[in-house]
Image (cartoon, rainbow over all chains, first blue to last red; front, side, top):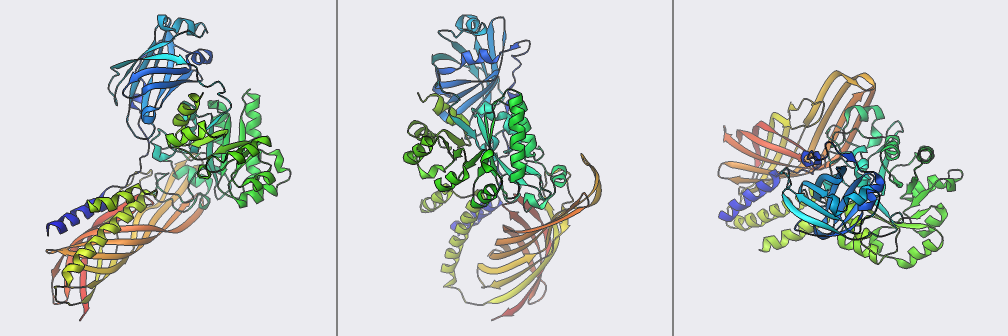
Length: 412
Length: 212
């Protein structure tokens, strides 16, 4: 009888437990401590001088981290706990001040952090545009909303890998999935703006067509509350008109479902991303994709930015559609099919899935033909390490660009 | 320990979370079947078929904007093979309105429009019933056909799809005649793919129309 009672309670407990998918991480105090008030923002050339591999001793971040310039801000990537730090920066009276938040890539622990470089520890040289021989950063972190009080020092050790522009760290779904507890929804304009802070220099975004043929960003074939807030939207994106989706449907973070055009505009206007992979999820939009590809590559060029937009060929249907378009070779594509299709498609990049392994011979053969290879989608840190250290790929698609960034920048 | 050894691989399987719940709940009910099958041996066998019709108010928690009406009468019908023991088995269906918005004028970035929306579900569930003292516990597992009707910008959309669905219920039945009982039931329907739960109370009428 006791066992039976236990069983009944266990079943009721199990079945009435809430099924909730994490819908986004709240950054404590928006990562703001107020330390940057009255400071002057660092320039890109100053943050590059801080970039490097640093040693430290911290229970949160382990024994070494990568500090990477991200425009006029900085990000920190650690191996331990797959932790990372997103920082904003400024200087005042020859002291460099950085504040922001830390978190783990694969769980929701987070907190605030401050990092200070005093004039005698390298700030003077950095502000004059000189790389100091030594940089020591005084850092403090707190947990959740507590003021940072756990102090540790971070010391410059050596430079990061030299070829920072020759490897593509491609953020999946614009920066990561909803389940990755990011502060914005997957495939949103918000997450695209975060991608570089997480170490990515490229993004992969999913494109579907509305009923009235507007290309929008959305991953799933079936609409559900995994991605949106409204339960009365079921079926697929192509069942609804653009106006209906935009007026009555919101992503889990509250943002409206973005159009592809808005996403590309955001990439050009608000980021320094170098590559966008359009994962084509529906037939019938090739001409629109070609047109938008050209428009936004030209726009980026006008702004002096080097942006590559690649249209994905994930299956035979899309392959046929693109092949049947006049002069398909004029439009850069990325092919996920085997090498035969890749050769026929005249794609610039071959993109096999990671489960095929390192496939060195096949990758080398593609390289010898003058093309690149990206592998998708790798999240596990150990696997990332193997593919970077032993593999020959030119890029990795990942939900954890912070993990790939750490492994790549420390790989030399 | 044995239970843990069985559950642990399920939890580590590379499957979606809703399917993990389905597997786990199936596992637990298989355990119940096992427990009760053993007790059945010592019991006098009498079988009966009963039908239960119920109707009551179901409530759907929403975090959407605009918030739609979310309390509706939801009739259900259940056929149960009663084994005169702890565990019975049956089928259940019903008609649930999960959320609904009658015609309203809504202001949008594209101008004002008439907006109507309704989400309905017709669950088809295999139901297990266990009597514990005078209380009936129900667990149903199956599929549900969900339809949405949306009207905005002079365009009507009707979309239907099958989704996994399960429900749980706890009920009390009071006999008013030899084969007839009335009762009250609290139940919840879960639609894992949609991450939607609708719960409520219903009044039931049960008629045991066949026994042998």
